[in-house]
Length: 517
Image (cartoon, rainbow, N blue to C red; front, side, top):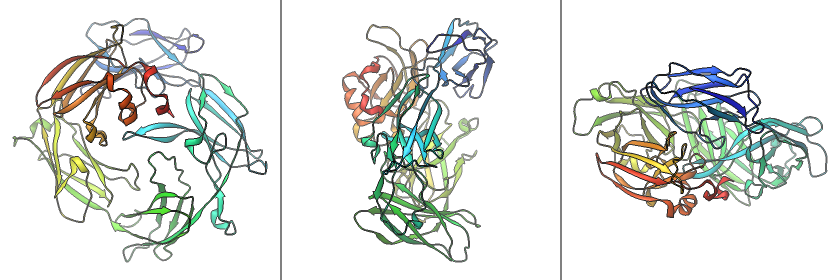
């Protein structure tokens, strides 16, 4: 494979660019080869084993990119390489990073030092838009900030001043997270579009104060524990970007906590893993127009859940022996203190999951052989596949049944002109009543010829979509799916069925702009 790396804006060749070809399938995961471009920006990769790969490029001062990527968050296109193949004239275009600078003041116009200033960007979690920190810095004594090394894209600017709310003389206000140009929440903030290599100056902002309420409570730990206990507050708003400044430490002999919170819906979680056994507890708190007292968190020891995986209509599990099959738990609301353990499935199908707390968990199975799918998951009387798993203090066993008879789809994606589309995101969306479960969706990306393949599919009714350009996870957004209805192709899959289809891509300009912030 031969090609070059260039500046996406000027077209100039980029020397010292690190090029990596990385395997993406089960049979070549971890395999790869790398090179560094010369003064002319050229690279050469030789003696590559046949297989499916992704091609990446990175360099200081530029946003990383991959072959076929249309934006920073895009995964790019798969490259299916065959024996004896020679790919020539591959061009990887790296956009130069941007800079944003400005000044932060209070409502009296005084400069504010030690303010955390962040560029945040949207991402999708279980089909709902949320925000994450992309780049951040602190203001200096003049209230000035400068954030550099920023990939081009759409952001919102947030400023947070972490003051000690317990030393403010009891004032019912504190500095609130403020979004440019001076809004108390992200919904009213103005998006900032940074172009490759742009130097954006004068983005100034006044940090606001907001009315807060006291939230007071206690943590009750099992007797005999003298450990440090962390107490954290997180927003229950799935789209919120919530900094971890609302975190304190208590002890069993001094179990009281107090926070100042703006009106809203929160989880208050306590967690300790310093003793012989990890304990945790969580309480939902709704803050309105008055203080909230007597919040009680009862810490309970986390549990170990035993499990067993079997293959439908088979007693022999040797088909799984060569695979590293893992069972994992994830908090269904996306937040938790502590990390629920994962369990590797043994030769007899048994596994164990540690650190299981009282919250609702999604169960995920990975590493199954090609063509397999999860058919059922039951924990006592709970249908863990449909509704998730909640540990109830019982000795129930998590029973997982997998089937080797998953369906297969092979297909091609073309645009309106009939041309193949590389790097398109192909999605199988389940029926509307199942779309709150992210694990019901299946996704693939097209290779350099517009081809895609999906195997081990659960029998179901699906709608197939192919987007030329879409954010990861954005395809689970109900509003996005609604706008794409006319582009979808209905498909009914049965066990062991093999389907072949062609899909017309959804143009990038038809992806709702509102869904991108």
